[in-house]
Length: 105
Image 1 (cartoon, rainbow, N blue to C red):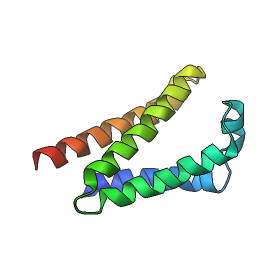
Image 2: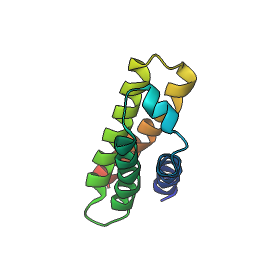
Image 3: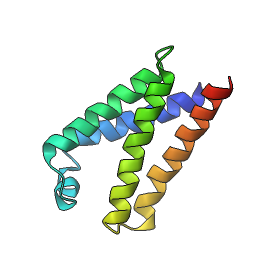
């Protein structure tokens, strides 16, 4: 439950940054539209909500994984530093551990 709460907190924080437009300049620099940034922010709210919904946990995990893989791919493609790539990679690891716990439980 603590891991699920931590993952939720991380994604809600990331969603707030996107939905308030604070990271807009980065998204524009990477070649993405504001509309796509907002859609990603919504996905970052919906996926962790599904993580708490009995029977839809794996759908939430899949959504979280897709968002994180897209983030990591973007950061690598744009040659962002390791310090930028580390946090989403660590978060992906947390999501993978949570998915393992769901599948084994």
